[in-house]
Image 1: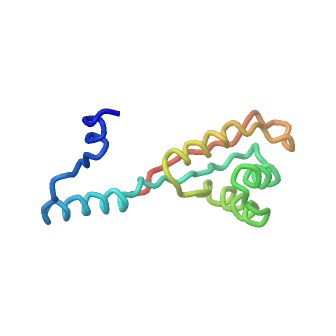
Image 2 (image 1 turned 45 degrees about the horizontal axis):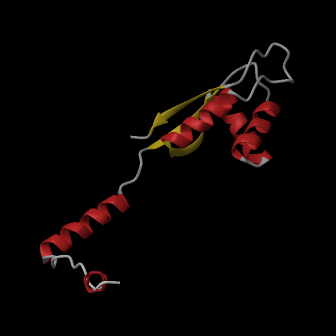
Length: 125
């Protein structure tokens, strides 16, 4: 190894010293990035006379891992009020859950059933 190469191996690159205002600004930017939350969305299941309570309970257990009791409560809420909020989450996750509901398939317990239940997502203000 030549002398020049040995000297280059020992060179230490140093950044210029940061001023107090620069440090403060950099720390504030880091804190702002950490505290910035993604907008929240609700996954809403809509009532449908062509789906049974058993179907809704089974679907919620499979897709959301809700216990049977919670699935029954939500099935009853959909039946009585026309809709139920299933989940509040990020937009990407809400879209995934909505799409999974739409792809779940028809209710095998009701002959007239043509397909999956309907779900939408709505932003929380």
